[in-house]
Image (cartoon, rainbow, N blue to C red; front, side, top):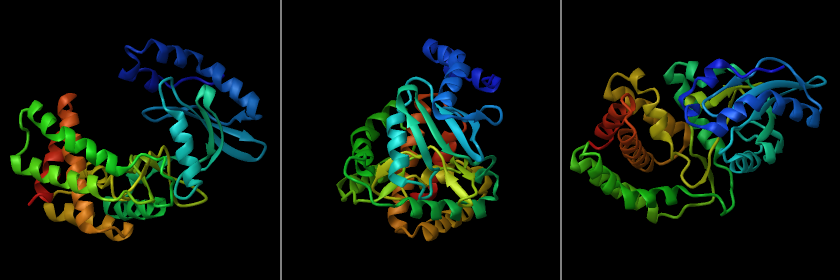
Length: 295
């Protein structure tokens, strides 16, 4: 019988989520049901990220990962994203059961993420992945232009509500960038709206493969700000930050001015979001990126 890891049970997200705690209690039964339906056998203990539980399974000699998401997760958009990319830089989807939020995925190595690589090696890998993910996508996907337009509407309001946490000039620059990206054509290429080191695992089919991508249509460099702030403490000087930026831009083959605009937009967005929620570690990183890229 499969067990839910205690580290997952103890996460704060379940403290006030009665439905979620019920799902955790039912997890062994859900795994058993899905294994029977898909003719799978367990091949190891369950593991987890921040959102879902993953169980290694087999069907004969074939190895897979069975991913089950809790109530409230939008598995339909996750399934659609993986079908759009169809293994082009992302984990392969072999089957899905949206009624119980289950996906049968390509088995990757959970012990090896891109976060373990030195940052000067890992950043160009992410840039190359962003380029690989820039595949044609239909008009149904939400766009990076939509995100920018929402920031045009909300940045100043949220900045004032947060107590004017940056120089006014940095807000004005982020607003101008958001307005520029909101008025630009969205294009027809896909982008991952949740691109960072721990979402990339080692694989056999390719050296590095994205899990849990968030499908957008528009600028491939959209999430470069997150790439930088997630390991910014490993970049002690401004020159180091700019070198990492240049490394990503070169590997992704995207315009540097547009990439810098998205760093400012995403950093302002995450700064304001984090301050509203009482985050303490990431807001200073966002302030630093805003300073470096608004100079």
